[in-house]
Structures are given as C-alpha cells and as structure tokens.
Amino acid sequence: MVAAVLRSFRAAAVARPAFRPLVQARALSISLPRQAGHSAPQLLGEGVKPGQVPTDEQQATGLERFELLGKLEGVDVFDMKPLEVTRLGTVDDPIAVYSLFPERHVGCTGFPADSHDTVWLHVTKELKNHRCPECGSVYTLNFQGDEHADHHH
Image (tube, rainbow, N blue to C red; front, side, top):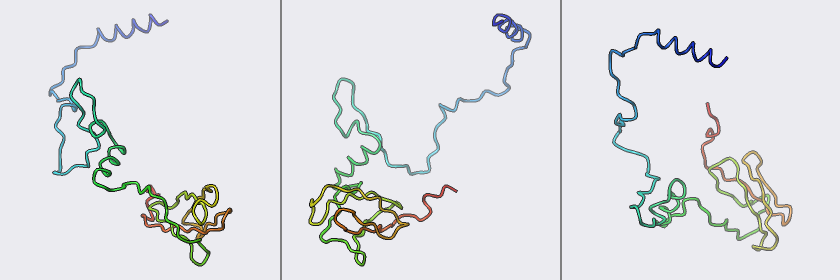
C-alpha cells in the first residue's frame, strides 16, 4: 500500500512542469533588522574566547544577569531584604506589606522576631487584614501596582 502511494507521488512530480518563480525573494533570515534607535537592556553576556573559563558577568543571562548587574551597581533588584517589623500589627494599625502584585506571600516569625516558627500567610488586596494564627500579628497589602495588569484584554 505504501509503495502504491509513493508511486502516485512520483508520477505526479514527473508529470508536473517545473515551477520557476518570476521574482527571486531573499530569505528572511538574512534580512537586516529594523531599529528605532533604542533597544531593550542587554540580558545576554558577551561570552568568552575559546579556551578560557568565563566569569559570572560573561556567562550570565536573563534574570540572573539582571540581578548580577544590579548588585554591581549596589541595587537589590528583587527587594529580598526581610520586612522590618518593629511592632506587633493590630487591626487598627496593621503592618503594611508593599507589593506591585495583587497578592503576596508573607512569612511571619512573630514579635519579637523569631518568637515562633515561620507561618506563611497569603496576603491579598481583596481581604483588608490578614492575621497570623500563631502570634496574632495583622498584615495588610499596600498594593502599588497596576489595577488592570492581570486583565489580558
């Protein structure tokens, strides 16, 4: 059966005259890119010459490179320092957690710090206050992001 199908394709290919395009077109892969005079930050390292061992700056790419370049400039780009808690949050005066997203995970270790094991709270902008079940400290989300960022319309 397969042999019959192959014979029919060969017969069709022989019977058809050769097609010649009237205009020769360049392949897209060799076309020069258009530039508007500016570009996105370069998140690819320059690499290293063959036979050498690359440094972190030379081989890092993407988010790792973004973080590395930030550290070289003295900026914590992902804001990884712990939330400074100098008091116990109450319903009237909760501890505000800054966020660019409508939700965030907060690890409560109690007040004073490390008075209990870490309890992870899912803090959202829909619910005003979130209370730690271990120590009773209250957290609220200080949402500073775009209200419509999660809508893809």
